[in-house]
Amino acid sequence: MKRYFVYLFILGGLLPLHAQMHRYNLDFELSAHHFVDTIPIEFEDDQVYITATINGQHYRFNLDTGSSQGIAYSNGHMPYGRVLGKVESRDANGHIDTIQAVAFPTFRIGHITIRGYSGSLLRHHTTQPKYDAIIGFDLFNKGLNAKIDTRQGYLILTDIRDYFEQEPGYRFKYRLLRFVPNVRLTPYPGCSDEALFDTGSRRLYVMGNRSLSLFEEKVPGITSQVEGRSHGHRAIGSFGTERADQVSFLWLDGFQLGNFFFNDYHTMTTQGYSRIGGELLRYGSLVVNPKRKRFTFQPYNGQEAVLVSNKQMNIAFVPKNGLPCVGLVWEGSVHYRNGFRQGDVIIQIDGRPIRSFAEFQRYPFVEGREHTFMVRDTQGLLHEVVSVR
Image 1 (cartoon, helix red, strand yellow):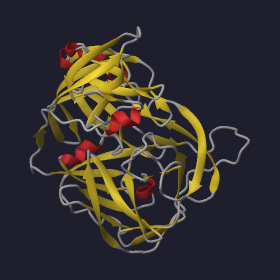
Image 2 (tube, helix red, strand yellow):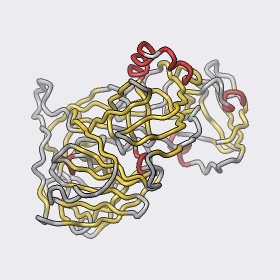
Image 3 (cartoon, helix red, strand yellow):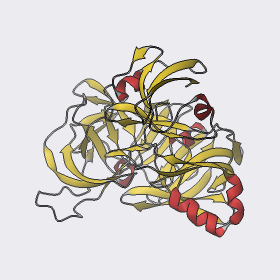
C-alpha cells in the first residue's frame, strides 16, 4: 500500500518576505505554434507519466493537475538551473512553508520543446522515486487544450482553440483557486462538494472532514453511509504528515460528477481539501479546455454510470522518526483484528529488519499473501502481527 498524497499550491508574493519572491507566471515558451501533438504516456498506480528529454537524456515527469507549477527535486536525478526566488507554498494538509523556485532546463515532450519553465524545489520523500519531476497545471493555464487517454496511452496537446469542441462526453466546469482547478460534485442528493481536481492524488474521491460535517447537519440520513470512524493520520504532504484527527470511513451509494455517476464507492475523509484524483482516468478519457474552464469526461464503457465497488482502505502507514508507523487503522478492519494498533512501529517483516520508511516502501509485498510483522507498540513492547498486505 504505497500511497502518497502530495499536492502543492504556489501563492506567489503573498508574504512580506525579505528575499525576492518568485511570482506565478506563464512566461515559458513552446517551440511550435498552431500544432497538434500526440505524446505517449504511462499510467501506473493511477498516476500519469510523461517522458521528457533533456540534453539527450530521458526523465520521467508526473503530470499533476493539483500542482500549479512544476516541481524539481534537490535529491533527484534531473538537473535544474538557477534559483529564481522564494515561493510560499501550501500542501494539501494545510501546512505552509517558504521554499525556493528554480529554473527547469529546456526539455522536450513529444515534438514540443519547452523553454523557460520554472518550478518549486523540494526533496523526494523516497530514496527510489518513480519520477524525476512534476509538470503542473500551468501547462494548461498556458492555453493548451488536451486529451488524456490512459487506455490508448496518449496525451494530445494542441494550442488550437476548441480543437476538441465536437467531442462527446460529460462536461463539467472548473474554477481556478490558487491556479489549480476545483470542480463541483454531488456525493449525496442535494449536497454539493467542491473538490480539488488533482491527478497527483490517486483515489477517485476523498471527502474533506469539513464537507462531511456540513452534509451531516443538512441531511441526517447520511450517517447510514458512514461505516465507521477512527482517529489517526494517513496523508503525507510536501511538508510532513497531517496531524492526527478523526477519520470517517464512508460507503457511498454513489456520487455524481457532471451528469456522470460513480456508483457503490468506498472512500474516507481527509483533513485537507476534498479531491478528485487520478483514479478517474481508469474509467474514461479526459478533455481539458482552459479557455472555457471545462473538463469533458468520456467514459470507456460508453454508459452514463460505472459501478466501482472498490474495497475500503482501512490501514495507513506514515513515517515517524524515519521508521514506518501505523498512522491509522480502522477498528472494523481485518488489520485491527490481526493486531495492528495506531502508533505501532514496524521493525521487521518476515524476519527482515526494516531500518527506514524507504525500506518499508520497497519491501516486495505479495498481494494476497500473509506477512509476519514485528512491531513495537506505543508502550515500547514488541509483538508479532500476521496480516495480508
